Image (tube, rainbow, N blue to C red):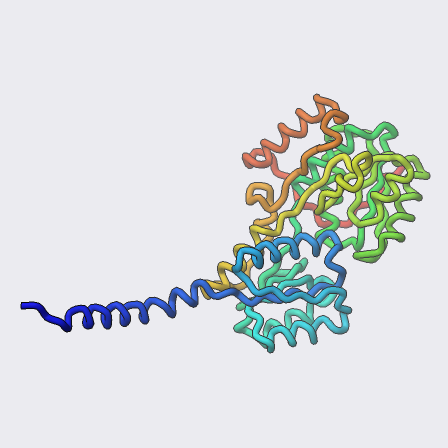
Length: 333
C-alpha cells in the first residue's frame, strides 16, 4: 500500500537534519574578523610581511581584514580599543613601543584574541606574541657576506638595539666569522623603524671607512650601497629585483605559518596565550634564504656549497644557530 505521506516525512526529516548541521557548518566557514594596527607604513619591511600573510588569508576568503598604518604610539591603545569594541575577533600588530598599553587592552577584552609582535612573554588568557626569529637565514647570509667581502669590513645598519634586531645582527656576524674569521664590523642604530634617508647616511659613513658589504636591516641602506657600488645583504624582504647589482642575498621572513595558525585557532575557539616564535624558523617554513638570483653565477661555487651544507644541517636540526639578543658591538681595531 502506497503511503503518500512518506515523501513529505522524508523531506521534513531532511530539513530537520539540515537545520541541525547548517549552523555548525556556517560557523566553521564564517570569516574571522581581523584588524591590524601598525605604527609604521605598510611598506616597512617587517610590517609588509605580516600584511602580505593577512592579505593572502583575505584572498582565500578566510578573514575580513581591516588595517590602520602609521598609528602614533599615543594613539595605539585607542585604535586597538576601537577595533575590539567594533567586533574584531583577532587583533594583530606590534607592541614593542606600547607594550603596557597593548597588554592592558588585552586584559580589558578577554574574549578578543591578540597576536602582537613583542619582546615579552605571552599573557593569559588571550595575548600571544611573535617576533621574526629569522636568525637561521641571517646566519647563512652572513656566511655569504664573509665570503664576498674583499676589504674584510662589513657595515650593519639597524633600527633600534632591541632583541629582535640584535639576534639577527649577531647571527649574521657569526655566519660571516665562520667563513672569514678576520672580518670586522661597524654597527650603527638609527633609532627609527622607518627613516631611509638616515639609514642611507649611516651606510655612506661605513663605506667611507672601508666597508664593501652592508647589512640592510633598514630601508635606505641598499640605496647607499648601489650609489657607492658596494654589495648589500637584504633582511626580511627580498629587494634584489630593485637592486640586481647590489643585493647578493636576503634572509626572508614568512609570516604565513603564524597568521594561518592564529586564524585557525580563533575559528576553533582555541586561541590562547603562546609564543609564536617557533613558526618563524626555517623548519616551519617561517623563514628562508632567498634565491641568489642575479648573483647565482657571481658567488663562488665553494662558498655556495658551504652555505647549502649549513642550510641542510639547520633544516635537519643538526646545526643550531644560537640566539643572542644582546646588543652587538662594532669590532675594535
